[in-house]
Image (tube, rainbow, N blue to C red):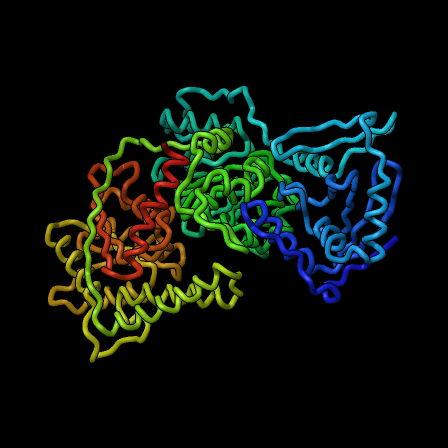
Length: 621
């Protein structure tokens, strides 16, 4: 018996009334399932189960096994990972049987299920695991393992999610090859990482994650490794490895990726973008270790980079980040799916257990920006996530300065926010299209730029009133210089840096400054930092977010920082502050923020502390 499911011929939808997160998840599975063209063929029908082969349009084959009316399992990974008793293949079967029970294929399935002989005499064994309950049914001397259990075992075979009980033995103190000694907390973290093999090191910024990882490479005594990191820290990794280990590393590009992958030795380094583009080539090599520096870069499960890391083969995998959770708890889940797949269970179960439900709509569950069941969550991640927060530094002081918008900027800002509210309201009832999502992001971006100055949107104008925020930036910089303090100034937009630099250059007494942004090459970046550090007439260091990660060397000459605007992501702020508040800083770091009143920035200001509390409660409490 064979049946070709063609979505165009079945317009009616199976409606589910979402009363809980599981039903919302099932609804999403159904919505996706009945858009896929697929062929269903009954291939086996002994007395105790019915086997159906499913072939999708892309020729991918899965197998459905039906043991009784309420025990329908599938061999696809989605069935196991969703943990809601359904996948796109079994969903189509349920759709056909309930919406079109008179169809000849539906009649055949329903009649066949009635004929199944499942009795107490059959050995009906239940397996419990990390994910759910799996079944194994035996008849006489014959046994047939259900597809869900088979898939589960396949996943568990690939990824060992158990926590080793015997800790790795490291010398104390741990002395690096160049004579430096690890701090006791670094020694403890390294021992945990070596024990777990797949681990996340989330010590706070400036605690020495890079040096700790290099100590791990020294312990492994292997040159078969790969380091993936942002462009801004590649040179730092190269210098440290050359200094500590006395080894050279290979900068991987699209041209030499094939050659590097074909060799069995050598430590390579590349950016996340290069890794994603060459993942198939690099995936051919089995590495001893892979290090993902600033692993929060791969928190998006829909990105090519995330998919690339899922395919990498390595014995040791270490992710480094002081801000693993940047915006929401989802960040941790995405990264854990790379480090220890399946550890946190299905996404909808994870959300409903550890987030507070705000409301449930037809297409989504809305969660409050807070977490629950923290002890249980910390226990679940304790075997793979290792953190340390106290490195003996003084807490920075936070100074908020509030300004207003002129009438022209206010009008534009309010129009942008009105359009934002319309799209957000629409998203509660139905998913936004790709174009609508992009438009929503652009509206929010424009509203934030209005808080700085309209020049970012409309360009320079002689008739426009000066921005209060621009005036406040110049005032804070001037005051810092008058007091003999150098200052680091961050902005998300290079256009804003241009405006402030122009202001400083046209002052009666121009203020010397240096700048780093994403358009600069590595030698120019290093030169910009060296000038700020060594030139007594260079008072200001301007940086875009390209300098917010991995930049080192500023803490010895500066302890004042200014954020021109507030980013949505508090991790960005903490990474920036970590450029000054790190090992080697002897003074209290003064951090200044400029916030435009009664604006989108007011909302961002309130969200920042909420998001920080999620990270701190999960990782550092």
